[in-house]
Length: 109
Image (spheres, rainbow, N blue to C red):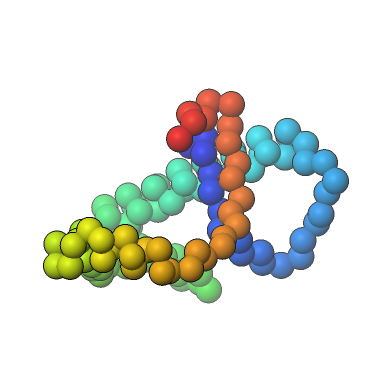
């Protein structure tokens, strides 16, 4: 897991540095990978019937469903390509910021 993207959400106190050392970036990537492995382990354990020790933290499998239609394809089908292009052109861009941390084995996207 060399590529990591984090939304612009800051919790707790913040430490601002003038230079971010490589050791900090490496630690971030290692923690992110360890967290992904822990999440996979917890999910597998729950799926195999594990119980959760009593205490303040909870762990369970959330089940549900969602629909993510391809709105552009539907709009093109119903109204045509020109209407879809006009809708995109009339929509103002929404700025965003994300932290991107890439390891040495990252592949360019």
